[in-house]
Image (tube, rainbow, N blue to C red; front, side, top):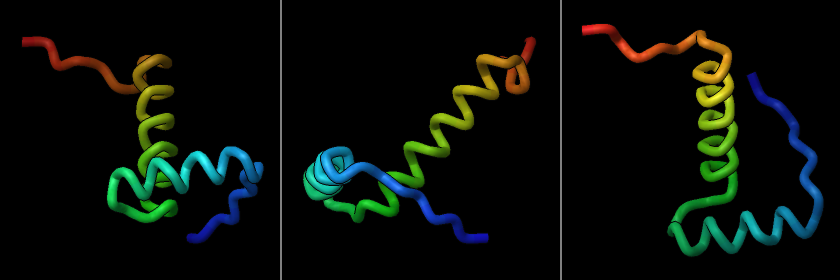
Length: 53
C-alpha cells in the first residue's frame, strides 16, 4: 500500500539535508521517522509494554 505524504518545502529541505548526512534517501528517512512515531504512540498508549520477568 502506498501513501502520498505532502511535506512543506522547508521541512523537506531539512529532511533532505539529514538524509544526505546519514547517507540515505529521504523516503527511507521519512519512513523511519513515521515508524518511530507509531511505535512511540503505541508505547505511550500502553499497546507495547516492557516484558515482566
